[in-house]
Length: 274
Image (cartoon, rainbow, N blue to C red; front, side):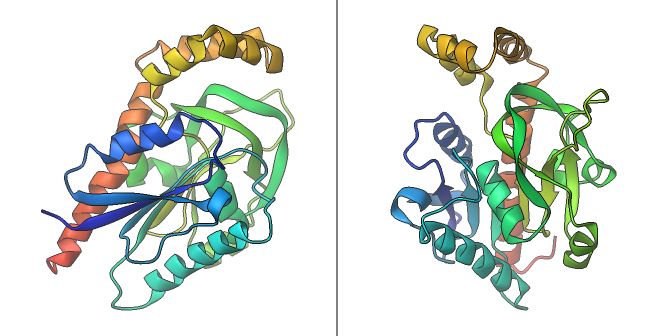
């Protein structure tokens, strides 16, 4: 039995969501993970120690630039501690997967680009386009280009500092949908910060079946129609009933990350190079 330990960093700030259960369900598919713990980053300023091998940091509401002067400091210090640990020769690697709000915060911490509020919220299932680097990255192995993903956000990462990214060894893996008639820069949708650390702007954990049930609820449907539009709602539901869209992303991105990471850790523990 493996003794690999995983930590979930919960950035939902007690807001009800589908993401946490979906992440837990994916983790529980893997026998290689002996245990996992959840840390309430925003409500309780909790961050995990470096005793864990794998970290999944969730999405969440609000601005990635806001905080209370405490929890976000703890969070940024935690990111830096993992980065510094991995840079020390001889240390066993620690692995991070950032999702949505966490991804924006990581990009802010590492000065990837500009963090701005979108002109209008992204709400639905949209195509994500891999870059040339993304097409060869193991994170997206088995996906089409473009692939479809759940994308719910008011904020974005744009205007990457390419010289800084090159110096740091960061790689942009994906960009948001192509909008030829819109004079707006496309947001970064996925980034590889290092061999061990990746992040995505979308929600790879999103489960189409759970989302269908969630968004078919009459009260939620009415709220969406009032907040966004009937067009956005119907477009999202069409994609949720198309098995070739979000289901493939759900079954590939986070599961493959965990599968490959677990195998790397097991091999490292046995002294085998992979």
